Length: 91
Image 1 (cartoon, rainbow, N blue to C red):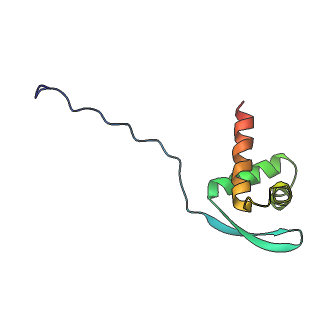
Image 2 (image 1 turned 60 degrees about the vertical axis):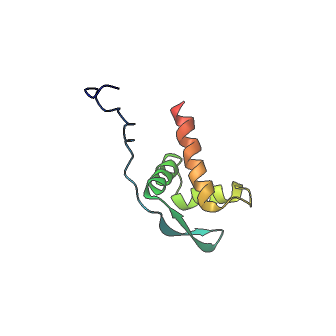
């Protein structure tokens, strides 16, 4: 390599979205209160998906909770539901 060669370009930084630490919210499912920690982006998407489906966020969360396998935590089920809806709507 000659000393006049430009330095090798490294990978470009990824344009990451705004990020937040998970925030804990209380929800009532089947008459009992529980709390779920999700990042703000997931809370926003859950609210939008619930509104688009004509239901409350709490109702949507309860439906996801009832449908999830017992070995999958509620926060994981909520994130995967949001992701699946985004992917489905992208197609």
